[in-house]
Length: 107
Image (cartoon, rainbow, N blue to C red; front, side):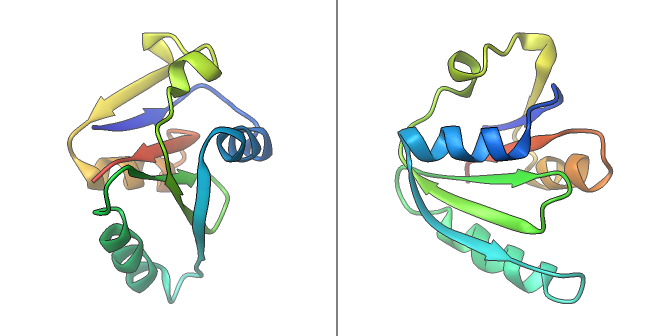
């Protein structure tokens, strides 16, 4: 299940907090030309057990983590602060459209 966070969280704080509890395996930097190819590689790596991804607004990177995270507990999120979806494309498009701050992606 993918979690789309609509509550504003400072991107640096979100990233550093996740790195405290989980292992950052790799970050995938992209630009307008390489985004689709980079996204495919990122999604392929998400198939590994115990992995999840992070995609944030205004940051041209996908982050691959290993570990378990309870983002609701860490950031004191309420059900109105996020949306959950099985649609992995929605997790990306909400960020790209500026309608959400971050997506936690699980394949």
